[in-house]
Length: 276
Image (tube, rainbow, N blue to C red; front, side):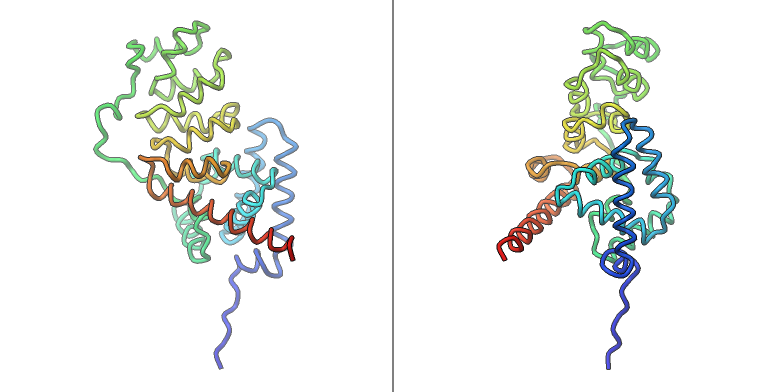
C-alpha cells in the first residue's frame, strides 16, 4: 500500500488546519497598514510582521496577499505596495534565508512568491551612456547640482530631471516644486542609473503614486527585484503593456503574463460559481 505524502507546512497554512491563522495574520496586517497614513509607519508595521515569521509562514503570507490582490482586494494591494517598494524588507534577510525561502516557494509551485526573493543580476559591460552618472543637461560639479536640487527655479528643476546621481535625485524628490509629471519622467528615463530608480521607488511620497509605479515597472533599468514586486500592484491593462514591451527582461514579461493568466483563470472560476 502506498503511503500518502503528508502536506507541507506551507500547504497546511494555505489550505489546512493552520489556514485560519495565516488568514487572520493577513487581515491584521491589512488593518494595521490601512489605518496609517504615514509611509514610514506603514513600512515599520510590515517589517515587524515579516521579520517575526519563519520561512514557511513568510512564503504562505506572501501567497495569501498575492491571491487577494488578484481577487481585487484593495487593502491587500496597499500591503503589497509597501512590500514592493521597501527594499529593506528583503535585503535585510541573510543570503541563506533568501535562498531557503526562494527554494521553498519554488518547491510549492509559488513562482510569483519566489520572485520576491530573487536578487538583481549584475549588468556587465555597460555602454558609456549607461555608465554616465552626471547630467548632460546641466554640466556642473556634483556639489553645485545638489544645491540646485533645492532650488525653486523651474529651469534648473527641468534640467535636473535628467540627473543620474542618486544624491542629487534624493534632494530633488523632496523639492516642493516637483510635481507628479516630473517624477514620472524621471522614473521613465533611459538609460539611467538603477540607484536613481531605487531612490524613486523608496520615496515616501512619490512611490505611492500609481503612474510612478507603472513607469518604474516598465523601465528596463529598474532593479529586477523592485520591478518584479511592483507587477502585482498594476492593473490588468498595464500588465499587458509590460508583457508586450520590447527591451524588458524576458523573465519579467513572462511573470506579467503569468499574473494575467492567473487573474483571468480566477475570474472565470468566479463566474462559473455565480452561474451555478
